[in-house]
Image (cartoon, helix red, strand yellow):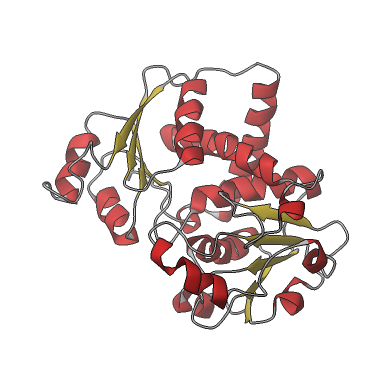
Amino acid sequence: MSTRHFLTLLDLSKKELADLIDRAVELKALHQQESDSSPFPNKVLGMVFEKSSTRTRISFEAGMTHLGGSAIFLSSRDTQLGRGEPIEDSARVMSRMVDLIMVRTFEHEKIQRFAEYSKVPVINALTDDYHPCQLLADMQTFVEHRGSIEGKTVTWVGDGNNMCNSYINAARQFNFELKIACPEGFDPMSSLLADNKDRVQLMRDPIAATRDSDLVITDTWASMGQEDEKRAREEAFAGFQVNHELMTYAHNDALFMHCLPAYRDLEVSAKLLDDEDSVVWDEAENRLHAQKALMEFLLES
């Protein structure tokens, strides 16, 4: 049986993803009841970070501890990944020493090459093209607050970045309609738009895209590695802020999500982010539980 990896949402079937979300909800309840089990003693997660992150490191490291195993943190200073040693060799060596490997890097092609030569499951904890683990947390959050997302309308407002690309895959895998509002020059991957034209619309007007939506999502306008473009991007995205006024065009019970870190009063208003009904903090917490369900699935597979 070939090794299962999780590089995009398309690596799992629709049923596997639905079951994984249900399991994440169950694991969260068990954790809140202090009824965690430790099914994977002595299992080790290798965590390779070429891009830094607060939420990703804490959620994976804590999650592996909850499962009874341990995690090893490796920053860009701690590995030879893509520098002194070929990626293929790093994958061969690391996968003989650990049971699961999480990689957070830049080029998506890099993690694809790593997974090709790994003997153990590889998880994409973010690349420039995709962020599938965040989508697991987002889907769990919607299920917890509103039930199934199937048949719903979802709106993405902002940059057509890795999160936006993953939402296109999510529309396919979880069967919802996705409307994307972004300025010209900041579109998501054209191949993804073409492959999902039956369920994804690209628009330029945030208001039109938000109308009658059940979920509205945004992300920072300047992702990691784009800091020198920050001022130009702020000008390009003027009018694309998600705030209470924009949310009035969505359904009355529509949710707002943001994968964080957020820049208050840029892509999202401070009032909306800090609203007492905000589910953003549940969304952040659910990275822990969704990734526990994912690691459990991959280790059992």
